[in-house]
Image (tube, rainbow over all chains, first blue to last red):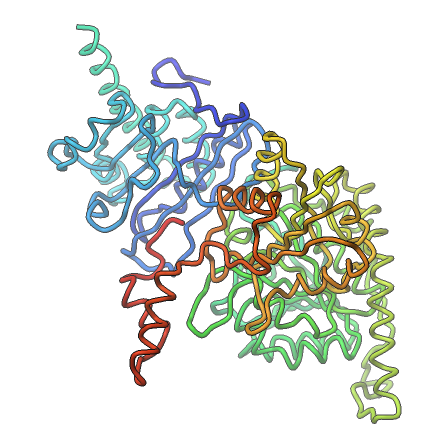
Length: 215
Length: 417
């Protein structure tokens, strides 16, 4: 796995020595929240891991809050409970901050990726995020990247690129392969390019951080 | 070949490889992606010869399945929830006529209040309809059970319902090995009906049977279901030999050796229960779990054998009989009536309420320590209940309970768990 540029590549150890990585994705109907979890699971599967993706179950309506889940493990996954304590939280729509309890169960060592062109201070989260490991918290302008590469404001594929860079749980190549498998040729290429751009951006901010912290 | 696909997709592909000749369904919620995918395969010509019939209701879906099956065609349909209830009269007819229709039931709750989420109320409503009812634990098993279901149905002339948890399984994407066409063809011979409606040789079926013979007809249906108790393990063994994995059968035991406390359950919750059992085993508790795969016919002997060493049995079920209690619990109690054990019922997961591993571990601890009541409603919010009870007590026109509670809570399905 290409983890050279990633941070925090050690998966969280569960009690009993199992290493399961659990992801929760929040967004709105129409933003590809469910597809994102499915793509992530397909990428993990392609890398020889066990994976499970499922949506929060509700009436599917455009604009309504939607949650999806993905589990990745080195052993078969039996659990069917929703992800209560996510190792990583991906937020596709910042307007949910005032509507949904997005951070429910989010642990101090969790990874957080928010789709926004603002930083945490500008989002009003500056105080809130201080208790977490700042190397694991990133914002990423995925909607803008999608607009640039797809011509449509669909942030899900780009965020998966950011997720790969932030968590090191999956390679960008596997994410791109899953994207290309899922979408038609043109849409696949464009989404793969958006994912690569987000991967690059998140990596750069990660490097900036590591330079800053060694200064 | 193992692929990372949605449960509904895997079932659709598996059903297609069983070569159904007629598939009919009413394509509206509560329908799953299964029918959508099969419809696409028929249209694209990849599933052929097969006629896909878009009917005007679930009642018509089962009625057309009955007609198709009576002419000797391998027939399949799928439904859930209110859809099953709407077709229920015809569901009884299918079994009464001995027609080997296979139907997927993507288990969901039944309204009112409106609820589209998972539980087993729909399957329980059709419990006595004369169909064989099989419950899948995983999407792999759901796919595999369909291959076995067609053969089981056709050998016995009994319709089979394959129950898989709506959303939790149908909408989950995971590694699934869809049975290969060649292997399915080897396992499932072409349908050879016992009787056929044929315009060239007119006969009638479903004629009136009076008191002089109705009991005998029903008793023969009962005997056929009892035959299924022999055939189901046999088919599961043949399936394991042909496909290299265990799917189906009557019951599945997990860590029941020396277990003093045993959970009994059906469907996908078994996975979470197994994780909970492992955790309690690590802590030193002698706990295990028995999964019921075949619910109708009920495998009394297999359940009795699986529970022979248990002191406490906790039946976790996703449905209940209002004013009575557990449904599966009653069957388990009958199976173990001559055993000295303490039987506890836990009603969980109603209308999509998430069943968490933590609460299952707490249940196990309470069970081991003898602290469980006869019937427990898992995760019941007593504050909400008390508030509504007070409203009802304080005024005659207290309003609709469901709407009152929604008013207290604010939003629908706003919580993760």
